[in-house]
Length: 107
Image (tube, rainbow, N blue to C red; front, side, top):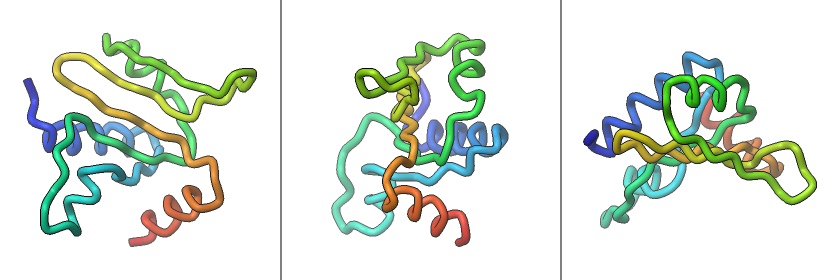
């Protein structure tokens, strides 16, 4: 089973290869500036769009759960599971989250 840090590196590279410009968020991101890291079992990324992510991950045999608001066709989060991997990909939808992807992409 992969370590969570391995999942972070692997999926960051995969998302980048799909042109999604991922930004690390959640407990792993917080661990970079906190004295006491939070325990976590998944990796969370923020992206501006999903592109082909769902189809690619399903094609590779991952269990992919797409979540959207009732009556909305646009997903806001994709949960990717399989082989010990737990990755959540959230779509930037608010002004704040879109700004976060823009600001983080410039560093």
